Length: 593
View 1 (tube, rainbow, N blue to C red):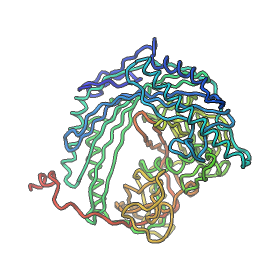
View 2 (view 1 turned 90 degrees about the vertical axis):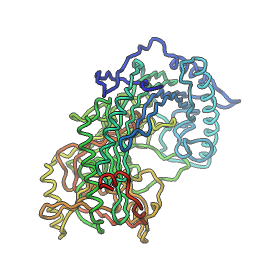
View 3 (view 1 turned 180 degrees about the horizontal axis):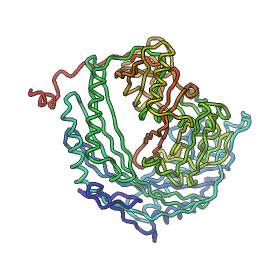
C-alpha cells in the first residue's frame, strides 16, 4: 500500500500532519457486503439435513478491518506494515430459544475451542474486494459448515440430557428486539512518514539511559466497518476506530532479576495521543523508575496495609471485580470453575463485597470521564443490543451483572454487553466500569492513613503499589518457569501459580516519617473478591486504566486509589539469568567505551 494507506474511521480528524488522519464518509447507497449477507441469510433459514431441524436463528457478523502498525527501537524503525482483512463469523442455532445447539461442553464440535461454545460456527475469510458473487460464495460455505456443526452438537446435547434432570436451567438464548442502525462507511488516510519520524525521535530517547537494556515504541492504528445481520431482523453497520501507543523498556538488577515497565495510551484518533514533549518526559521518568528499582532491595515477606494508587487501583478492580461480574452460565457437560479471583460472582448477589460507601456501575455509552478518553465505550454491542448502564454494586452490595444474550439463572435478558472477542466469538464483558467511593479523601490523607495503619500494626512501614504487570487471569494454573515453590499452595502466592493480578511493578515502602523507598521482587499472596471488604479508605480522584486493542473489545476501568488494612506479599523465589557478558553498544558510547 506504500507510504500512505487507508484506514477506516468514524471521526473527522483535524488536518494536522502529525495527526495524519483524515476521515472521508462514504454514503451507504449500495453495500455489496450487506446485500450478499442478506441474501445468504435468507437462504440459510431453509437449510435442512435429511429429517433434522432447520435453524431457528441465523446470524452473520463481518469485521472489515484496515490497520497500520509501526514499531521502533533505539531511533530506528523495526516494522512498518499495513493490514487488511474481512472476516465472517456465522452463528447458526438449531432447536429453540430455551434449548438449542449451544452452551454445551460435552463433546463433539460444540465449542469455540471446546468448552462453553456460544454457537455453531467459526471464522471465514471473505474477499476484501466488493464482489457480490465471491462474498456470497464464501458466506454460503461458512453457513453450510456452521449448520452441520450445529445439528451434530444438538444431537449430542439431547443425548446428554436424556439421563439427566437439571433443575432451574436457564434458557440457552434470549429473545431480542431487532435493531436497524446503518452508519456511513468511512475511510481515512494515515500519514506513515510523519509517524515514523515521531517514533524514531521517541524511541531514540532510551539511548540516553545506558541502564535500559531493551526498549520499544509501537503505534497501532486500526479501524473497522462491522456488519451484523440476523434472522430476527437486525441490520447493523457501525464504525469502530482507535489508536494505541505502547512504550516499553527492560533492565536487569545486579542479582539478575529482570525488570520491565510499560506505558500505554489509547485514543480515538492519533491527534488524541500525548505530544512529543510529554512522551519524551514519560520515557525519562520510566527510565528513572527502572534505575531506582534496579538499585532497590528485594522486599522481604510482608503482611500489612497496602495502598493501591496510580494505575494499580483500576488494574485491581479490572481483575478482581470486572471479570467476575460478567454473567455467564456454565455449559452443560462442563465442570464448574471456582478458581480464586476468577470465578463468576453470581453466588455473591445480594451480599456485601465492598465497603458500604462504594458504588459500582458500568456505562458503555460514556465516551469520556472528565477529559479522559474511555476506550471501552460503544452504543450498540456486538450482538446488536443497545448498550445500557448497569448498577453492579449499590451501597457495597452486589446487585447486578453485565449480560449478553446468553441468560443465567438470575438474569434472563441482555443489557448490551455482548462483546467481540475475535475469532468469531462473542463474550460478555464490561465496557466502561466506574468505581466510586462516597467518602474518598485526598492523596495526602490517604498516605497518612497508610502510615497510621502501619503504626497501629507495629510496623516500620506500609506498602504503596503504583502499577502491576499484566497478570495471569485466564492462564492455566501452575508454577511460572524458574519460580520455586516452597511447598505452600496458595493461588497467586509463593510461586505456586501466577496471581490474576500479575506482580507488582512499582512498589514503595512508606515509612512512618513519610519517606518512600522503592523495593522490588515481590508477588501477591491470595487475593480475591472477598478481600475487597478489607478496604479501609479510598481516594477522591478517578484513575483511568484502558486495556485492549485499538478496535477489539477494549475496556475502561475508572476507580479511586484504595487502601487495604492487610494484604500478604512474598519475595519472589526464582532462578535468574546472569547479567549480559558485554555492555550494550549505547552503554559503551555513553561511557566513552
